[in-house]
Image 1 (cartoon, rainbow, N blue to C red):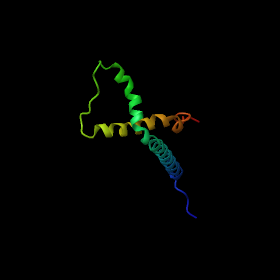
Image 2 (image 1 turned 120 degrees about the horizontal axis):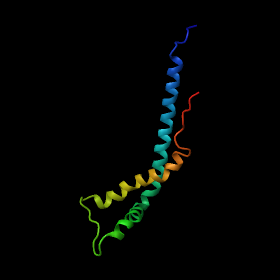
Image 3 (image 1 turned 135 degrees about the horizontal axis):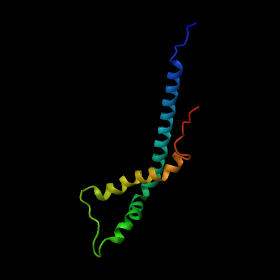
Amino acid sequence: MAEPEAGSGAESSFISHLIELRNRLLYALASVGLVFLALVPFSAEVYTLLAKPLMDVLPAGASMIATDVASPFLTPIRLTPRVGCQSDAPHRHPRGAPVQRPQ
């Protein structure tokens, strides 16, 4: 029977940490993706809700303008994943980052 190498315990610990990191990243990506898919049909309303404070302080008769051809369509769609990340943060980090305490 072969003797295990001296560093194999540390290596297996490192691999288990990488697997845990991969699982957490996949769960985070999946949860943000689900929130994004739920918010896409309401992207115009989300944009209007978040743009309202800016619209309230604009001078009378002024409006926001689009400086790119696709901006009126893409801005609400680009905003939706950001809102998904922010609204899903408590689900992804219920206790914050786990703290490594010395033993």
